[in-house]
Image 1 (cartoon, rainbow, N blue to C red):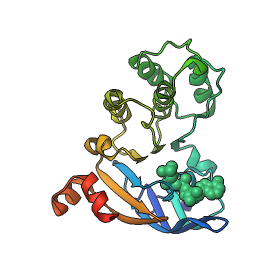
Image 2 (cartoon, rainbow, N blue to C red; image 1 turned 120 degrees about the vertical axis):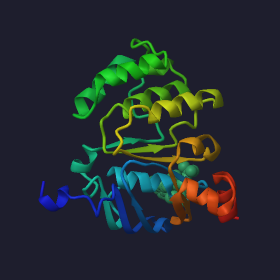
Image 3 (cartoon, protein in one colour; image 1 turned 90 degrees about the vertical axis):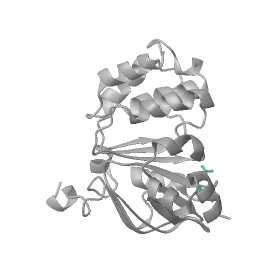
Image 4 (spheres, rainbow, N blue to C red; image 1 turned 135 degrees about the vertical axis):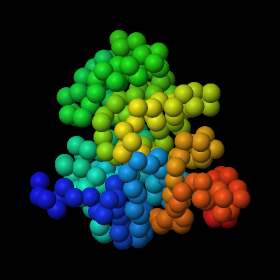
Length: 240
Ligand SMILES: Nc1ncnc2c1ncn2[C@@H]1O[C@H](COP(=O)(O)OP(=O)(O)OP(=O)(O)O)[C@@H](O)[C@H]1O
């Protein structure tokens, strides 16, 4: 690792300049500019197909055929950043046959920053038996298991793609509480969601996207004060 690689971009946990990514004729990301500082919980909001998942995949190092400059946790996305970035994709990635305890072992084997004790604690808190097989779990239960695992890495940045979409409204609050519990004060959490209303209480900042571009970003309290409205209302206003 070079010294340059190890430096953060002027203190930003995420620093993106002129990011473009297309799938054939579709411009999924069309000139994204974004700087996010550590120690924040940031919501990524936008309508279907605006590029949220593509943006998170670029940051996670899963999609690499993009143009522009991207830095995350002091690195360009790749093996070094992956060791410091916990990515929770919007699809299930753990094997169906695995039991909860196998999933803990998979994470322990893959990630040196994984805290197995914390994961066991979180899974027990959600009421999971470690012998439960994933194929016997509902969509919402799998989401909870995956969140417990992803948030039990001692990462610098957490990228969560629609983490609570399959969970019933009553359980969302508990899950959100689990996401923010025991977070390192310098950690950045970047969460994509349609559920603005549910996430609003835990967000420090917000990033709105449309057609592959950032349309608005800022501190939630500042935006609410400036617009005299909730995030949900501001989102509708900006994207009218
Ligand atoms: N693998 C792919 N091949 C072709 N087009 C793709 C692919 N992945 C995404 N796209 C297109 O890129 C655009 C952005 O998609 P993306 O999944 O990033 O949006 P999103 O904001 O996450 O949407 P949603 O909220 O529905 O999950 C869309 O037009 C989508 O159809």
